[in-house]
Amino acid sequence: MTPRGSVLNVIAGPVDAQTFLREARWAEETWKMLQLDAPNNLYRERMLMAQAHRDRLKADPTYNPAWMPPNNDADNFQPGLDNVGKVNLLLATYPLPRLEQIYRFVFEKVLNEKLSTVPVVKS
Image (cartoon, rainbow, N blue to C red; front, side, top):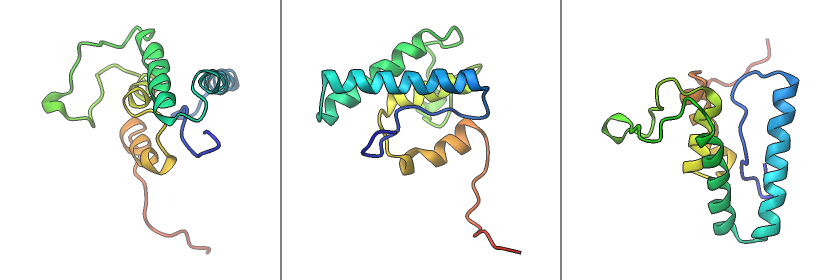
C-alpha cells in the first residue's frame, strides 16, 4: 500500500516466501518509479500503475485480451486466469484503489471466499 492507503498490489491466497518477496519487490520498485515520474499527481500515478498491471497481464500466457465477460458483467473473469492474472486485471482496470474499495471483491470474486458480518465473540 502507499502512504495514502492506496493498494499497489494484491497477493491473493497463500504463496511461498519467494513469490511473496518477488511481489513485494515489484510493488516497491513500481511505486518508486511512479514517484520519479509523477510525484504527487494521483491521476498520473493511476495511469502509470494501470499500465504496469496491464504489462504484467500481457505477459501472462493464460490471458486472452480479446475475451469479454458475458453481458459485460465485470464480476466475471476470463476462464483459466489464475489469481495473479485476476489481480492484475482488477488493478489494471481500477488502479490504486483504497483497501476498503476492493477487499470484499478480492475475497469473494478472486478467492471465492465468503466474508462474514457476524461479530467475533470471545468464548
